[in-house]
Amino acid sequence: MLGEGWVTIDWGTTNRRIFVLGPDGQVLSRHADARGVTAIAPGGFPAEIAELRARFGDRPFLLAGMIGSNRGWIEAPYVPCPVTLPLLAERLAWAEPGRTAIVPGACVDRGDAAEVMRGEEVQLLGAAAAGLVPPDAALCLPGTHAKWAMLEQSVLTGFRTVMTGELFALLRNHSILSGSLKGEVRADAAFRDGVRRSLEDCTLSADLFGARARMLLGKLAEADASSYVSGLLIGADLRIGLTMVADGTVALIGDPALTRLYGAALEEAGHTCAEIDGEQAFLAGIRAIAEKLS
Amino acid sequence: MLGEGWVTIDWGTTNRRIFVLGPDGQVLSRHADARGVTAIAPGGFPAEIAELRARFGDRPFLLAGMIGSNRGWIEAPYVPCPVTLPLLAERLAWAEPGRTAIVPGACVDRGDAAEVMRGEEVQLLGAAAAGLVPPDAALCLPGTHAKWAMLEQSVLTGFRTVMTGELFALLRNHSILSGSLKGEVRADAAFRDGVRRSLEDCTLSADLFGARARMLLGKLAEADASSYVSGLLIGADLRIGLTMVADGTVALIGDPALTRLYGAALEEAGHTCAEIDGEQAFLAGIRAIAEKLS
Image (cartoon, rainbow over all chains, first blue to last red; front, side):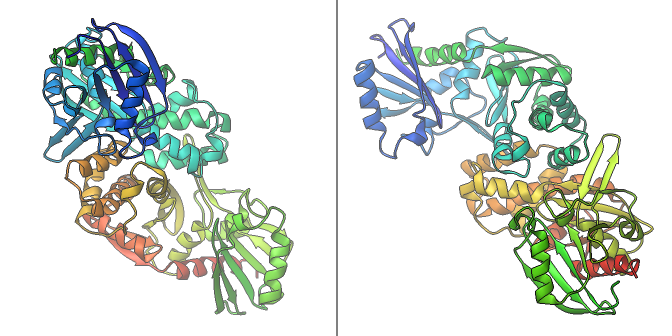
């Protein structure tokens, strides 16, 4: 199906990244824009794909991410862990038979445990497929909803989602702390103070208000508040994620501004980290899925 | 100074409660409105008090709460714990000498610990003064910024603030969960599930996203999401507050809709609670401060 070359899109909630690939899977061109699924009216996906075909050629499309959610084009049911790339290829949802397929998300659905992801599964499994991480690895993808994942023998066996980025945005934009959180977050002493506090004590929802008390009592400079509060949230994030990680290295995938913060926090927690190229991981994963279609 | 009768106001950020008291401290009338300190323009407090004197008589005024903050009329510096009613009376800030005084807030300012309150200190110490709680007591005031406080021999020796109500409002109004959190919070099975989860595990920022995953995977009905998420937040609140509480009863002061939820959560945690009348506690505290002025 893909011998003529194809297009893949990592299609998220607010953004998407488009890769036009040649017959051998080489990247012919890459494009990014803010036409995430919420930018497209319900029912508007066939027209959107037609428009993309007009731009990039009448090629097969292989889509991943929120495009397969109940807010996307068609729903691609979650594949429960343990998940592999061949399993994702088996469970593709065909939006246009033989022409446009959507990679399903992954979930954890065991007893009381419930986790979902869409899009990250391609990156996570692709990182192992590309040899960017060893077959047994712990990975962390910082972001609005940070993901921590375990690979065992290149199989995605479990993961956890932490609302770190969204909580920071809520506090920065709408909370009593808003006025003090406009500054840039730096991996500095205030950030590390926040990280240590969350690693030591399970008191996040008190420590967030505590940032205000510390400012009123002269223990925290307002200019340091963003870094300190980010440190509290990322420290609490690590406290959760590291329960999945044996001693050793955590592979970080994401925006360098974020992976730098997580790297500093991991250092405080006594872990090392390695930064992985998310695009390279995504492309390795999606190519492995595409191979199964040939 | 107060022999002619006086007026006291519990003057918060968004609301205020006004009590007109007779010569013996009896309540002649009570009034509540939404003219909290943020409703009054900077510099507008003298005119506001003049207007209140026109309504309620040219009496002395004794004010408590955010009116003494840097956003209020004049700043009444925090009194560090341990705090008593006579100490608050000694440290009044006089906005109009001999006529209008503001009760200072309380703080914890020891090493790395930082906590602040304004207004609750009168209620807390008043609860003991009125005999509503024993001299050694643990109290909890649920709300936007929930307070947990320790009284030892009727002295306020320490307290902790938890951002529970504000976090719930942020999630309900602005987060990815917003659409699912419009329903009423009930002290039901879903609420107790959330409480237990937070009491068992220190994973709040993951469990909040988990509510979404549980809905997507059919483990949580959308109609139960408000109760479950409130339970998560109140459970995390208890986990923090109960570190200050020996075995036994927690005295609850606040809006009955909230104290009912905290009562149910305390039951899950194996504690008993007693509801205390906040108005009675405030009046007992403010009368004891007023006595020192006679």
